[in-house]
Length: 98
Image 1 (spheres, rainbow, N blue to C red):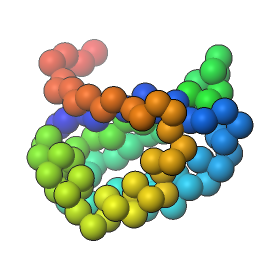
Image 2: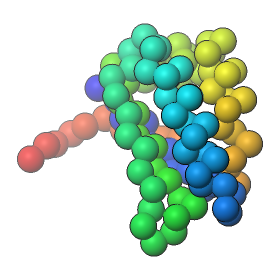
Image 3: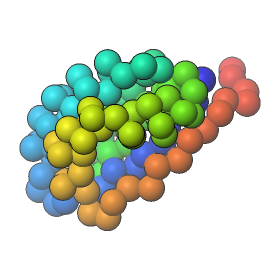
């Protein structure tokens, strides 16, 4: 399992609009091969900051399967204009669990 980690800085005052758009976008990603689950969390101290965590079966399910798909174009259209700056996405592989 691979964990995609994406801190999202949404333009000030656009959080509610972003969350509405995200509710449409999550239907896109959840139908992709290799998708396992996701969480989107809003920061309590900085309400324009969000954390997106997505679990994928493999790294390639995200980087090749999703990002090179027609569905990704719709995801991008719905969400990318909300970010400032554009997020840095990283991928993690679990090494321990308690």
